[in-house]
Every structure is written in structure tokens, then in C-alpha cells.
Length: 260
Image (cartoon, rainbow, N blue to C red; front, top):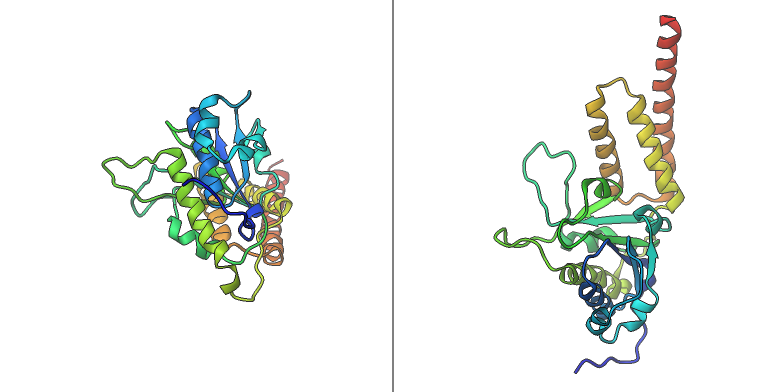
């Protein structure tokens, strides 16, 4: 009971990191480390925490002490995801309706299909136990996932949520040899940042009402990233977005000059 075999870690185990944003309870941190160990993962990152691990965290981690020992602490979510090609936010707060502009969540069983055959580091982001990730933090994510639960008591324990998403990733990893031969890859982190910056520039320069700009920016990001495009595809998309932004900025400059 509780033992382990001397076997290699799952394929691509270093390509996934778990990021906890301002976790409140040491016991949950230890339990998350144990859940990660169950699925052969080791890259745990925590945002907004300082200090040593408590006895409670150590006890809950069981045989995953090395995950706590090697955990990296960050001051900001941006720093924690700086080497990641895809950032996946999680939330138990779901919205319904035809006019939702932001909270378009995937389900865990969709992740294997989305992540199948990709390379590049993926981050799963989990918020504090009481409030979860804020809208501002979710805005920094490329994809979003929610775990369907009974509406009478919908919010999962932090380590349970981590376990479910780690399992979804694990299914993909263990079926590595069954994947299609076509090579896929996630975006280079710098290219991902450039895409977000250019989409922001495009929305800022468009001749539209200010309250519509955020929705335009979010929709473009979600639609593009939902397809997990390759680097060469993003370069083509970027050229179109950049030329469009340049054109809008020139038009604004022309109008300003004529008005003077």
C-alpha cells in the first residue's frame, strides 16, 4: 500500500507545469504535490507565497516530498508562465447564455484532443480555494477549462481539481505511441506574447466604441488559440493583424492631420 515502482516518468512529463495562485492552505499544497506524483508530474509553481513548508504540507504530500523541495515560488503569474507556450486557466464559476463574451470553458475530456501530439510547455493554472482565479487572471490565459459538477455543491477541493486535470493530461501522455505521425507544436512563448500584443494594438486602433474593444480582443485571442496553431501559422496570422493595425493607425493619423 502506498508504494511505487521504479519506472520512468510518463512521456512529456516535463512539458506540463501546475501553477497555484495564492493558495490559502498548506494542506492543499501538499495534497496537490501528491496528486501530481500520482500522474508522474513534478513541476509545481506557486504565485504569491513566501516561506518554508509546514509540517501539514509535508504530511499531506506523502511520498512527493521532492516536488515540494523543487517547487519554485513566483511573485506574479506573468513570471510563472514566462516559459510556457499555452496557459490554461481553471474555474468552477460557469456562465450560461448565448451572449457570453468571455467565459467560454472547455471540459476536461476535451483537453486530450486539444493537447494531443503537441510539444512546448503547458501550464494549468488554479486560483485560491475561496474565490478562484479572477477575471483579470483568466484574461491572461489562452484556454479555459471547467470541471462539470453538481450545481448544488459545484466547487471542488483544490487537489481534487488538480487530480482530474492531471488525469486528462496523463491519458494523452500514455497514448503517445498511438498519436498521428503529423508533428504539432505549441507556440514559442515569445511568439505567443507578440500575438497578444498585436491583437491588443489592433483592438486599440480600430474605429469602434471603447467598451467593445475588450470583447474584440478576447474573441480574437480565444478563436485563434482554440485551434492551437503552429508557429508558421501564427506568423501568417500576425502579418494580417499587424497590417490591419498599421492601416487603422494610419487612418487615425490622417484624420488627426486633416482636423488640424
